[in-house]
Image (cartoon, rainbow, N blue to C red; front, top):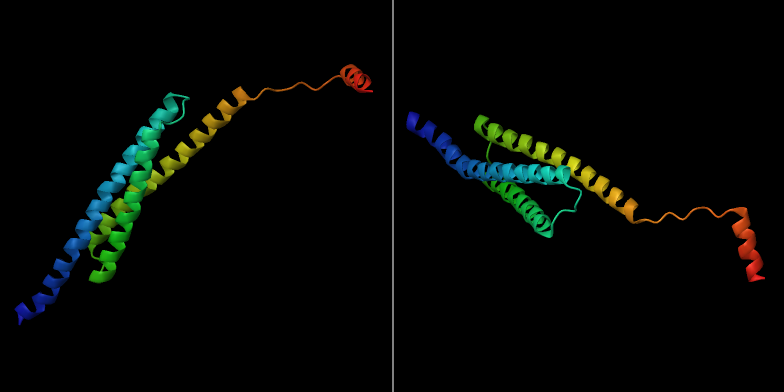
Length: 144
């Protein structure tokens, strides 16, 4: 009788393994995204130059990988019908914490990018002084 009671639990644990593996893979991807944002932050803080195209391509690749990882994880949880056990919660909460830190760092990076963009555009803009009344009068008289 104990063997028959253990079978559903064993099946549940077997179903959790692919989902947990999927979440572990997602968690490591979240760490990779976070480390990328740290690198981007260091570059933005250390130089006023715009970010290189290679870094932007890497960022796009990581974000697409993160999106597909989320889709795979959702599909695995949906298809397996896994109940959220303690291990499941621990791994998913770790991934959520890492992703939240990455999102906050990305927001800071966006602010730094905006700051760099505004400071570089100010240097390129030529400010034309307001004409004096004498200059306006001379200009008006030359056109009559």
